[in-house]
Length: 359
Image 1 (cartoon, rainbow, N blue to C red):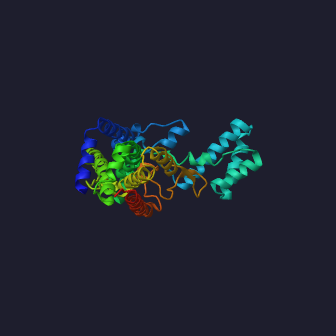
Image 2: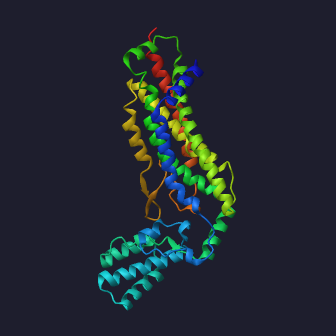
Image 3: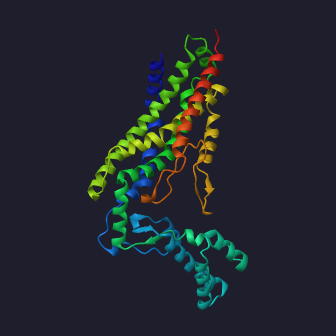
């Protein structure tokens, strides 16, 4: 009976045109975001690296444009230089006065936040710390950029770095897609006549719940698998052409770690709400809010505002530049915790559905 329910759900998804349209949108959305990382190559000459004038452009730049992370010392010096320039342009400081101020700050060894507090209290200069954060990337020479690429690839394969960016954007798109598609799991069964009929049949509660849930998971897994296979082929081809080390399994491992537990949590929440309210639609706004919560920024230790994984988050983001992506602290624990909570929700759903049986 369990296999029969799963097959029925898969057939319903395969007959649904929204299923295919959504899958195409997911694939195109992911490609649009990760395609710049497919252009990473060694540089032949300095002229291939354009100088970016706007701070916002530099802040968003990556190794593809020939920009690499600045050291703390360089970041400190560039931030102070920008502060000095602002003091001259907007506060009427003479060059000698601006140089004296930045020299004093440099010798003080204050942190970014402490400099911001000093400038605010003494000059009513607000947000001075942002100039340091805007200086986190610097334009490199071709030699510097190539050395940075080579050193990074000694730590991990190109496909390993790419897998994190892939999991980042796939996670966002596939959760939106799942929120839409999982509604079809129970929308038909929530109709009154079908709901009552199901509860009079000799159908075990666990067979029904697990069959429905894993039928939906199988449909989502098929989409994730096809998209991942496509990107894996592209990454292997591009990486080898650029002379980078690659591994076929890097993307698949990222999907197992950062995508599947999140999808299972979404599916279990959908199941729990559908069983509790006899209607899956209340799960839509609940899961949208859940996704927003998972993607909310936090104040980091250095005072900047950025991504920090939250408890029970259904998204794992990798916002750093390409070769600086690292697994966020507590991410693995969070994924295991998601699996445990998903199982508890499934068990609760089985109990509720069983108690509403009509014998």
